[in-house]
Length: 360
Image (cartoon, rainbow, N blue to C red; front, side):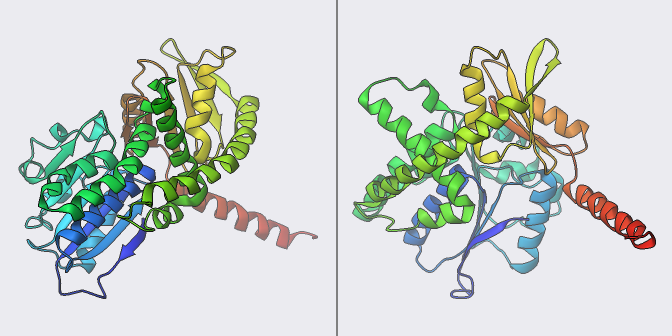
């Protein structure tokens, strides 16, 4: 369902609870870290429950919020932050489980635009912070910007997070690709790529733990990126092997006059960079790269003006699931992973039974 990356309820169960539901990538994890850091300074008596997950489909989101409501008695003194992912389905919200709980939604995906929810009464009550120009990490930092007026402690916290939030935004919104060759742009590009490397090599939980060290100190950013730069060297070597595999296995599919490169079985850690390399290589003329993943999802990367968020959304809906994301990077679910597991186990047991009856 999702990982619980932080839970302080046992320490302060009677106090207000801040629930943070975030995407399991670097952007979502940095956003969650920023929200928690500011919230615990605003009110040190609050407890925290943070969920992180890569599956942001409606089905999984609804299941996650069912779990949250079942095991937590939430009310008006508590808060729910939803970061870098959709809110629960409006039909689920209409049941009223969270009708008294303040909800803040911070996101930048086109398919999660606040207008998507504004027609529904409960959707209007949610506080939205949305912009396509920045990622959830940077939007979360800006959400607390006004707190700098409350004292030096908040100002120091804001500035200590700035490089991490900005570099994460550069990576997650793909803005790093438009950066120039100046010293400043080169440094931001280096930091953005280091964010990607650290997230992919450490995994969600490892990355989250890494960015918790020494929060708010003067050396926070310098120490953190020094560590991430070392991880970048290891990532580059592994990426080259993945890209060589992708070049050998890619096939072409024509969709309404657009050329789609289809690749199966590439580790998600390298998909964004692999797509960039294909788009830059003049031997290939792909408009879109579609990564078909072994767990029943498809990740799209688009070149130019091809809006893969719409394609992912429509494909997911056609297959009975959901999808969406950015204009140039989106994904969808097309197959139930549990059904794949059942089919595989069924084949295993039937084959073993057949062997048992024969001469082994």
